[in-house]
Image (cartoon, rainbow, N blue to C red; front, side):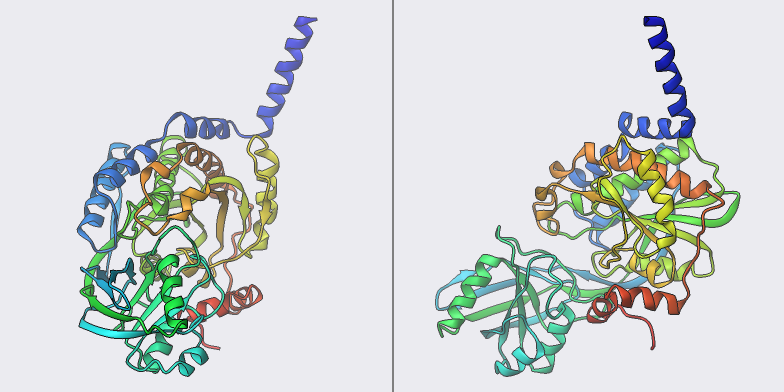
Length: 466
């Protein structure tokens, strides 16, 4: 009986192995046995810290990343470009009346320095042009309520800023809808334009307090100092390439830059670490593939998706079959084909065969904006995502001082690498799979069908002439 049972076990074991390539077992196993990406990005976060594009910290971190890649026998190259950078200065906002208090504020990226001045504060609701025009804001600072750190409803930041300038306001304060005394960092625009009106985020708690004062007719008076400034910089993306049998390439990317308040750990040390281990896996176990594979650590995502935009422009003449993005990617729960429906059968087959993972969300098609995939998508290049989940603590402080390496889960990182390495291997070696780029008319249709045209126009990223 024991002998028959052993025969059955061996039979089903061999049957399972025959259904999936042996390299799958190797890639999955190594993702958990080795985690060099966790080690490297942990060092970068703890020894160097935040990595704002153009800063000395960014350059040091990029050098360290390049050196570690070389230790793992991967030669990286830099693709340089010039752009408008931004330097945070010693900015300060003090409430003078009806009481004295130094406020917790975070200046938005691309806000340019201005001599110290005083201004009275008025509350303008959600900051629509109509609300601002009715509030008599000339020579005053305006207070705007925002719906949470990820809020998309109401006017965009650039729309509020343009309305404030049009109606001659002197400053803008955006307060969060999330508690926890956070004043998150963000960019004032996505066009790398200098902003000559001071714009700040403030905490929900202080925002609600100032709103109450305004509604009670107390007329808060503020003293505002802005020493942050814009300047032209030279910077670069970091690229590792594995040439294939053909030059058509699969691009895998993550942004390496971060805001300057915390360590840039979850956003996006996590994505950068995943990218590191994916590149290491490919070099070690599948360096020769049908399609060329290119791994890119982008800069400037936080200030307006700058590095990825430059990459798409610089490689416009090349055939990019697909782009896979890693931005705060957690443990895998499924896949997102982002409107490129012809990839659905490919990913549905992966869900079926990777049944040891909890890919409970299956395959969805939820196109979105806000990360480095945007310019690939607008160029008609298929953009694909691993749908991942993070614990609340991991994203609650994603643009704040508390974004520190202790919040990064090595287990989530290994799970993401295990699943994603299979995706990359299969995409890079499946010659029968349709890799079709969309033409401009098809891109516009995709964006409009998913109402992304409205978001892109609000943020000033819409590039199409209709």
